Length: 159
Image 1 (cartoon, helix red, strand yellow):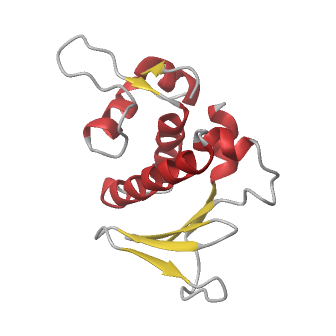
Image 2 (cartoon, helix red, strand yellow; image 1 turned 135 degrees about the vertical axis):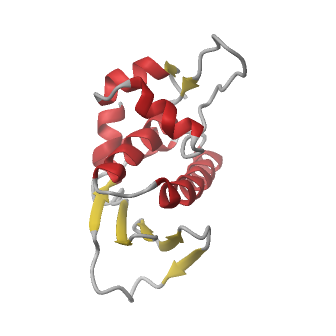
C-alpha cells in the first residue's frame, strides 16, 4: 500500500490548498485511509485515496459538481477494492504495472449527471442518482463525451 500522506502533503503534491482536499472529504467524495475523529487528529491517505482526490479535482476543473462526484467515487472505491482483492496491490500500483494499452482506463463525462467509466474489459454508466449500469462495448448510446479524463495519466502524478 505504501506511504500514507497527510492532507497537507496531498494538497502540496497536487498543487492545491488543503481546504480543497478537506472539502472533498467532508462532502463524502473521498474517504481517507485513516480518518480519526476529533480536533487535532490527522487524516492519512493511501495512493488510491490520493488518486480519487486528483480525479475529483480534475473533474471539478471541468465543472463537475459534488452531486456526480459522490457516486463516481463510490463506484471507483468499489472498483479499487475489486482490483486489490484480485492481485493484492493498490489500484495505482496495478495501473503502473500495466502497459498503456492494457491500462486504458478513462472516465467520460456525458452530461451533467452521467459518466462512463471505461476499461479494456467493460464500460459502466454511473449516474448522479447512484445508479450503475453496464454499457455494451459495441455500443456508445451518447451523442458525445463532454470531457474524457485519462485515469492512468493522473495516476502517474500520484506516484
